[in-house]
Image (cartoon, rainbow, N blue to C red; front, side, top):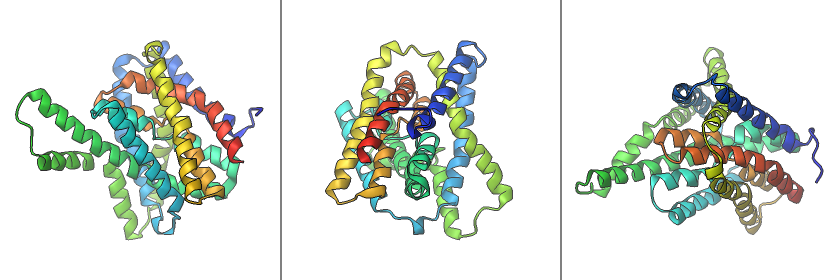
Length: 317
């Protein structure tokens, strides 16, 4: 398949590559120094993503959504997440890497890509997925990681292990009060009121949410400038292959097996083929797990996706 700059894949992925590149140059030129990276990460994780998730859920009309293909997407993603978790070992680092294998960059790349390739009808299916993307995948990942962190903490202290009920209760509490699920839950509960967001509130939330993708990708580039990719290249290629090849392949096979075809299947498979989302990078930073490997995986999977997403879209056509 011949690619030009007007091709949907390139026109969607190149801005992401450029933003990561800008962050990389800023890091190399010391415009953003190492001590400022953590503060910038907190800005993205504790301010921008809060606005994005709350507004997305508060303005979603879940009762109008066609959930068949979306439900299948999450079943496939969930099965792959737990398979990767058990294969790599039950620990918090493996949970972060398993999340990298299933969590797509649906906003920065998915929205323009699907809009260019499939039009408004395709966006309806993608927005159905996006409205619950963080709610389902990030909440599950948060609970699992918190459980594993609690278990690892108890083991490190050398004391008697806490009762499983107490461990689960603490993990669920930490997950609910976590910066990711909390705005999702709050936004979902607010959407049930049917009041809607007043423009005075909705516009600032939109501006903050729109800033999430670009700032997060610049942050990836800054971190990349301080990371030696060489030692992590093999691992990043493995994660990229899982994310951009295995994930969409499993989604396509499951869809065909259940008789889902046409545009709903195409959008879900393309969404599964997208590179690793920046939220995984933020998770790795928050829990201090596999930060260098996840950073490399975000960058490498974005570059790999130029070829793999093109192939996926060509086959679906």
